[in-house]
Image (tube, rainbow, N blue to C red):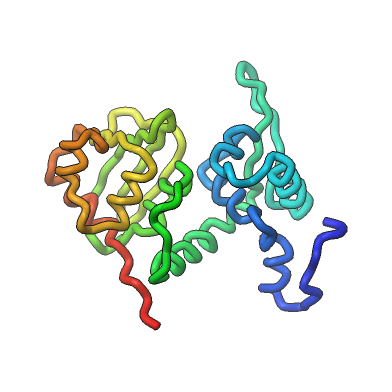
Length: 221
């Protein structure tokens, strides 16, 4: 990381910012939390970062021990980037930061949202106490992307790939998913009627699911 500006401060927070405080660095971590990605897929999730900038950040994160590059076995045989074990420890930090930030009175809701960011919003907003004893295995389809969402024992797990025999399938896009999570006035029935949300879930299950992800209350000055 030669040539990078550092805080030259013995505080652990300052050192953390030396590691992940550069522009795009923490968003690279966000894009890798749900699993490995090829460079092209990473860039698709971070279109505002130039390829050269993204390459530089990946190199710095690898030098810091947070990211590694790996070749997938045949037949894929492509190179992917993934978080190291230590890098994955940033997940609760990133989710806590998101929970804090989403309460901002000036939180923007119009700019585009990456698919991985939208899916991670489920983990950010999940309330374990909202529906005790609730269990579900869901297939979530966002365009060409497939995810499995598992809710049981007051915990939520999200992973790439569609699960077998899901209790329900939800098919939508990142913007609609964000609207469902952050706009309590948004009607699920209206989204279904408009074709923005396609699902085989019954209305009762949909309402239960929505209670699990209560919209955050804006912070007061």
